[in-house]
Length: 158
Image (tube, rainbow, N blue to C red; front, side, top):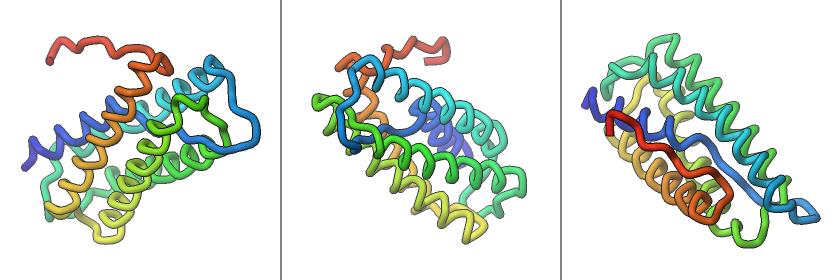
């Protein structure tokens, strides 16, 4: 289980955050891509910080204060990112992937809020985090394939 949580956190770290759509006028492809990349970088930094502290966390184990603080910071960032990106008008061909990202980010945020309230992660929460991460991964893959984000570089440990 210890490795499972570390894997879930590391998977999420590579996935960053979310994009959205809304607003009045659609952003040009390049502008949308730049804003999405900026949010992705900031989110990835926060995920990395959380992953370092939570790598040894097991289901049912109390969440240490430093991990709880990083979770709270990440939850707040995710809320802000969703809000910011919902105000953007994504190019039409990004709409479906963007909505998938928003939904998955909301699901993951809710799960982290539950863990903060409970003071620990249950096995069910780990499963929900994994499912949300898979959805986020798929949405980011679509956005990369459509040219909105740069292609991921292969990691040496893969």
